[in-house]
Image (cartoon, rainbow, N blue to C red; front, side, top):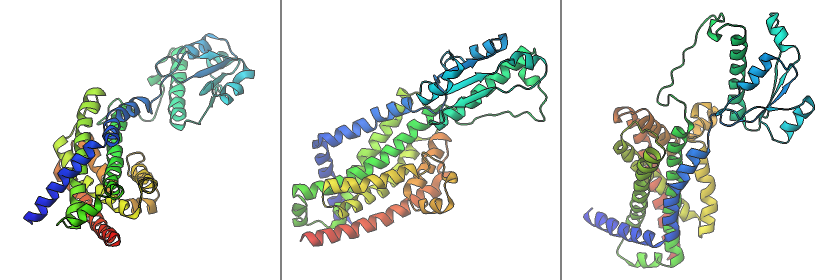
Length: 375
């Protein structure tokens, strides 16, 4: 046991030294956990912002002018007044996301107690923008009509009143979600790439034969690559959460970073083992890249970080339960968003550890087969 620990530590230090000399990988780590996190969190928004609305005003009344004037920043740009013949053209050309057609006689019909129809044409290419914008515009029109008639919007008779209170993200800011989930996704991607590249690099540089000539066992080599690369990624992820997410983006992290680090360490053991296993299947770095891309794309897209697991088809949801990424995303969301303690998240940690052990055994078997073939 002492020999296993000593050799694993020494080989891991050698791995860290080798990684530090690879400036491309070092630059990739730095970029992935800084610029890539910040730009995605700031650039990818699900809330409505600066939407372009074109208005066909066939009524030219006080009420229609009030509706046009109520479409204000930051949700909308100032409404552009167009003719009826240009309505389809602005949508087809992509100049506007919404085209509002106010019919003639709108104000007269409203004052007479009739229920006129206002047509809202929506470019649903961007589905999130279309859905959110439609709700905003509908609410604005209802409020303006109620105010024009001299009644408060909440005085309209309704069977029930719905009061919404959002927990953990009261202002529903998308950056609070995307920034943390981007750290998780990048952690998965880099864990696969770095651990696999460590094995491929040994083979391409011819140093794998040197390791085989040393009095070390395959398990020690694999463990060294797992802990060394996992440690680098773990430190980068913690620094990213602290410096980029919390300080740079101003996103509050409710839970314990120490508990997250513990769970992330267990998860990295599983994912780096998967990366080593993939590197034993591929023989060159280009082959490994082509093999790894669909793996971490599936892990990221179907883990629950982008789409809730509950909304997936039942067979797919069952299959994804065998992925450590699914359980780690649930763990990370519970800890970082909802301040869950270890008493709540220990089943996810245990599951990830079990899956990591299975991946490690498979990686070790494949690595031994690769060594046997090289000899």
